[in-house]
Image (cartoon, rainbow, N blue to C red; front, top):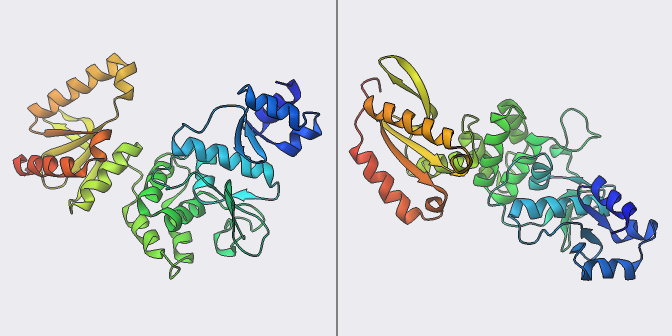
Length: 305
């Protein structure tokens, strides 16, 4: 690949437009050859990527499409789920990998690459009307577009890592009260909790809250010596602790697996009952629900509950 083209793509997160390639001397024939040799990969009719992207997760595909849309439309900025992935915030169940951008247009335009929206004054950054919306606005827009699960996953991550405050999200939520689908935003605000440390923990919490349970994320585990660890989710009023097992950290860190085993052994001696939830079970509620319900039936009431 031409060095100048590679440098251009690298500067834009791995994407470039056909017009940009022409400006540095890579014409349509050269671009067609690069695509044929799989040195570049089509994102849209006028956008290419230097890496394969179609078989990635939805958040990875959305990131490539978002960068492509921003390169194609220099007067645009990312909104909603697209703004989240640009900021490194995980998205889940967004339902589409089409990018969402805003630019000075009078009505919404839908293309294969992106949805182009008119700028909305209520969802511009509260710090400066001349800048693109911040994370609070992106979370609220994601709730409106894709529902509360996608928005809570993003909000939990952003809150946990100090990228946004609850007050900032609530302030933007107030701006859209009464909008179509604003009930999704109210649900997001009610359920978001920055104590959850991963997407899996958030999804596990939303699942059991949907069953009507009250839970405490990062429950302090105590015995006679004091606090010796934290459980992902403590079921309020019981000795049941739910742990989400992503397996990634254990696959690469035998020491982490050993420490986790020692913590659970100590927890059982202290009277806690542990139940693990894995990714595949989150997609099988007909299996997970009865298993957790049975575990709760076996659980005992904690003396301090």
